[in-house]
Length: 127
Ligand SMILES: [Zn+2]
Image 1 (cartoon, rainbow, N blue to C red):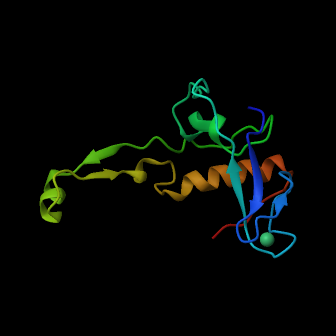
Image 2: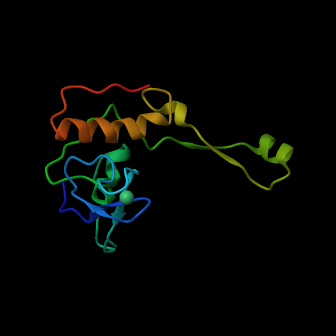
């Protein structure tokens, strides 16, 4: 993919963490968050039609290949009747049911499984 433009830091105490084998903060046990460096306007989207189109902006390691069923880029659908009922001028609904799993959770799982595979985990368990 791209050279890492991100780091991991603790969400609570800001302690930096290695970008390989991320889990919880070694100092306080809280979750780690990715912090992104600014990217230039010349950073291009990938020529694919799923969430991995945005890979140059995501927390990926060099050579990390997406595990995907084609998640993302679901349509926005305007709903005039719901807008009227809600008393707003316009209202749009993101149709996440168009994801392969029919859930918005597919995006996060694609990213999580991608990282798990890159780290060599033999399998994962999810709710
Ligand atoms: Zn911490």
